[in-house]
Image (cartoon, rainbow, N blue to C red; front, side, top):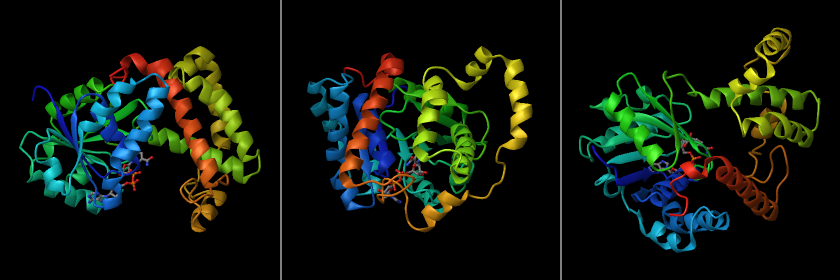
Length: 320
Ligand SMILES: NC(=O)c1ccc[n+]([C@@H]2O[C@H](COP(=O)([O-])OP(=O)(O)OC[C@H]3O[C@@H](n4cnc5c(N)ncnc54)[C@H](O)[C@@H]3O)[C@@H](O)[C@H]2O)c1
């Protein structure tokens, strides 16, 4: 397959709509489908809103907004969405049975060479593609929220994924401006989420123990680990700090930090009470519709500044 120019995205929620935007901004024709009519009807409006921030940050020029939106087609059926696609990615809910059925179904609707990708956060492609006749064309392409801004996409082939599928997926994601990273083993959580959860477990435990307030934990981590990690990688941090020092800190500290697989108390209670964070108006912090809009806008502006500072030249959406 020489050039992929038509892409389908199934599931147009938090992740799917940003994935649609990224492909369209890089010049691909994109067909989107969601089983919910509201998600289908609101797609162009949500992307138009995101693009305003890109224009504000100087990452997309104003005249490009119309052409980007015009490359996006909302379809009324899964079949219509995937029919002409050379690359299909699913971003439906995190439900293994739903993903297995989806891959089995759409395999029969697309040409043999079409690549079928999953954005699952946890299920390896060997599980999601278990019912496929030709699993060599199935792969994980795992984006991070907000997908139209965060640069990395983890590409994880399964045991039966072909090398050609892996190489084509890596090349496509790089072409659209993403930092595509090949993951060599099919571990649960792939790479980034494993690290993210190791950090979250300790953060939630420190909060439970009252070691610092939520505000202070966020400020301390942002102004230290987060500050460094926005600019250099964790292994580089170790090399700069000295491996002898980091090895002795590991020996002294690791026996002290949380190792239990049980969910820490505060987050468990919040989840049991239906407090899921921004989407319900209460999480570790309290939100109102006004503060949510303001915080979301501030978050995306900061992310866009980082994107511009460290990744803009690699980003295919720039000035398109
Ligand atoms: N939210 C994140 O931070 C994040 C990050 C990386 C990966 N993911 C993964 O991406 C996937 C989607 O997550 P999300 O946060 O966008 O969820 P979401 O709930 O915001 O969106 C899922 C969308 O899929 C639709 N849908 C469900 N079943 C469908 C089907 N069979 N056909 C068509 N549409 C269907 C729903 O109507 C909904 O609009 C999940 O696998 C999730 O684990 C999420």
